[in-house]
Image (cartoon, rainbow, N blue to C red; front, side):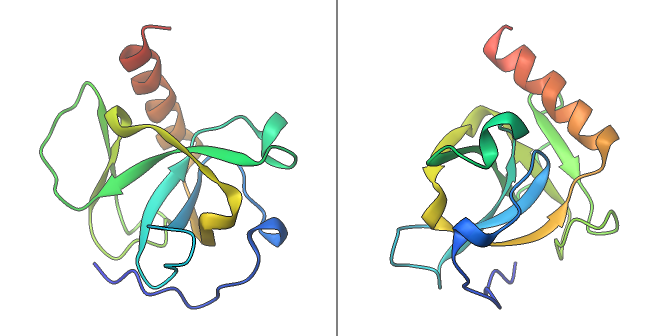
Length: 123
């Protein structure tokens, strides 16, 4: 999977919204090693909070339907291969680690992600 960022602009200037697919640096100073993730945090907090809650994406597709959601590169996601959202790997990162926004999840796909999060977290 090609994860080379094109634009390393300041994360504060990025439009980070629920359902955005973003590249996240593996460490604050490692924009060259970025991983795609989907933002799962409510938009109520995305503009002001110092961290962003997200789930990573993997190109290792295993079919764990109860807590993984498939994403296709054909859905304006910015992805180059089929991926799954790793609901079981939910995490929060400082916004400075977000390198750039590469795509946006569809409302239908995000409803599937939200349902999987509710199952995983027993909400």
